Amino acid sequence: MNAGKVSSSTVLAAVGFAAVGLFSFGLACLALLLRPDVLAGGEVTGVTRSLTHLATLGWIGSLLFAGAYLAGPQLAGSSLWSGRLPLVHFFLHVVGIGLLLAGFILSNGPCITAGAWLVFAGLLALVYNLFRTGSKRSLWTPAHLAFQAAMFWLAMSGAGALYLLRIRAMEVPPIPVEMVIALHAHFALFGFLSQVLLGVSLRVVPELLHDNHASHGGYPMAWFGWACLNGGLLALFSMVLTGSPQLMFAAGLVVAVGVAAFAAAIGRTLWHARSRVGWGMLTHATGVVMLVAITVGALATFPQAGEGMHHWMRTYISLSLLGPFALAVFGAGEHLAPRLIWRLRYAPWQKHAEVPPASRLGRAAAGGPVFFSLVMAWVYLVIGQLWHQPESIRLAAMLLLFGFGWFLTAISPALLCFIFGVTPRDLGGATPLPENPAKP
Image 1 (tube, rainbow, N blue to C red):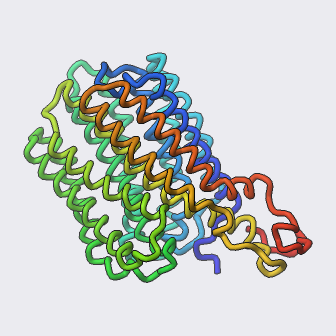
Image 2: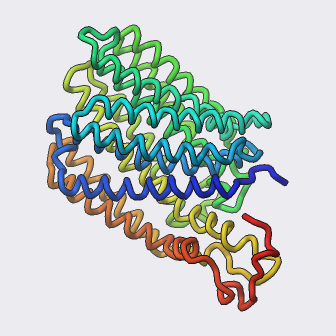
């Protein structure tokens, strides 16, 4: 069976994206520790924009790209169309982000433009590869179509970023810059990031709970969520052109209903298997619930335009990326990282030696500190953002780093196994023969 098979080059690219994502998260937390004022209501500067893109593209984007290449073939039920394009995408992504961050800090327009085009080219490579992968089979499930729709909004988000660079140079842009920024953020946060998170959760959560059929009962709600989420984003695009805040609020409300419906479908799965929910799944589920709360809060505080829009966008994006997405990614990562490494290192030896279970590659007890650290960090981040308190944001950064450290502790056996490989002692004392097992 080749369905869902992932090549070694794809795994290498996915691991590279994951490493970039985790490094970017740590770097962003250190930046907040040193410069908490960038999120405490101060002036929007190049450092602020650089930190924003480090979190969106470096942290969340990189990890979701890693997940996309690993989960895409599974959701599509077929092997990835090209195993080499992920390596090309990784190179374009890393170089592009480096140029973007340098350009924002140095206020260098050509550097920003070059970086944006490289990142966009990498996005197109991802979108094309996964569209071709998904077209091999017609799987009409909410998870599969949510993933495909997310690729569309990813391309729209990239195109919006390039258009934003262009209209900044115009004296009288056809669309206000603030509105384009709002569209870009919605396409990225809800069209791509949220839809990938929610869609993949529909497929991944039952597998993490060892119940591959639990999510089927929630399909009607998931279909309703998919229709509202994508329909609301399409309506939002046309409403921005009219310039009517009331119509934009209505479109945003439809998006919020879609996110809530997706979350309800995932919640049904968790309730069905509530006796098997551990720290990792609790962390992941809390992130999904938080995402719904942020969506409602963002709609209730949507500003008209002007400087209020900049502060609203900064609060909206930072609370999303460092709250629900951090919880969801780390919560799922506590389960997925050990299983992925087990498949790479131990699965090929199952027929030749006694291998330990995947649970041996994780430390479940470390999940508690991860959960409480991230939740408390988000609370202090809310206080610092809404009441403009830099010290509260600095404390949030310290808690984020603390939670990040515990997350690495939780998956440390898997990381050591991936770096150093397996030994005969790990394989029950058997002497492995490299030529016998199939390649992963």
